[in-house]
Image 1: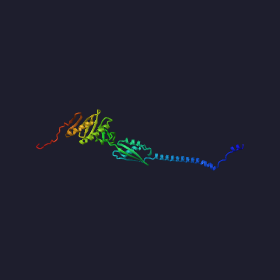
Image 2: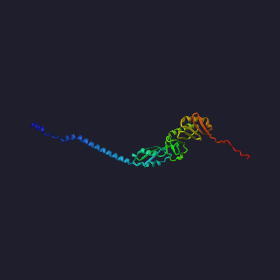
Image 3: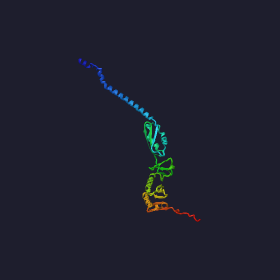
Length: 268
């Protein structure tokens, strides 16, 4: 019985200091967690407020750079004005780029933000190098472009052809320009009909027919023929047809030539 009473006797409680010492790791962990959560909430609040401030930061200035000959800076700014509802940070630069590159005379545009309130716009203008048909124009990449003052560019060479032939005909024109330059000849007109027949107009009034195949070969034969036989009679040549395998057909001007005729009025 004495042994049983000893086994069931309650243990004396530990001193308060020891119990607090045992609880300190848990207290420190809880405080650390609370501080971390509070700090995260504070940072999140600051980020949110900062983001909202940037979201509402307006575009106060649009700076346009690049050599502009046909474009007006005011026209570029006006085109962008309807797209600037959002703050500078959240503007879609890709959308603004598409907006500008859809304008006549704009070949390419690049935009960038310059905080706190500026949008920088760099523009490269289109450069028409040939007329396409009656009203359109081609740039250096053989892309059809629109221009605001078409009458100004009527002296450009004219290229005509079926839709989709722009790049191929532009390549032909560049070859003609390069190969004819040593002979002091310049192509001012190039057309292709529905059968693929090429007709070239030269600045001296001569028409050159190259047919629908063997472009390089026939052009080379014309260069040789012009250098050896036709150059000295260039004012009389109207048309040169290179569509013959063994030669060429040449049409001459049949207008009577009155060069050197003088009038003597003495004795009348």
